[in-house]
Amino acid sequence: MRGPYEVEPAVTVPAADSRALPHPVREEIRLEGILHALSDPLRLQIVSRLAEAGRELSCSCFDLPVSKSTTTHHFRVLREAGVVRQVYRGTAKMNDLRRDDLDTLFPGLIDSVLDAAARQAARTATG
Image (cartoon, rainbow, N blue to C red; front, top):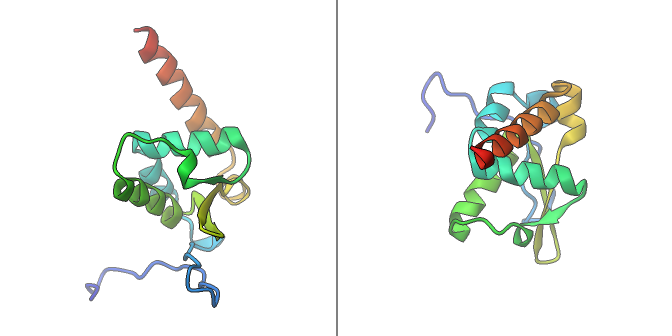
């Protein structure tokens, strides 16, 4: 049960397929949710990889140094924040960066964050 000040997040209604995953509609994506989702280095790595690929990638394409359940958690945080869209294709869970939605709502944000992350990685690798 939610407290009096907690708000139920708005999400799209899943399709009749029981494996459909809920996602926030574009209008409900919040900047603070995106920034929270991108504050974790592994989630930032996932988003960077999706941006580089420019297409859907299955969860199995990501070799993260954490357990499967932790990987699932990271993808769920990104999905619930509206950063990625996840759909099942057969037995694979496919992930795609919601670039159109994010660029419409927050122009340049994803590119700026990914560019800053790349500069930081280069700086720390040489330092």
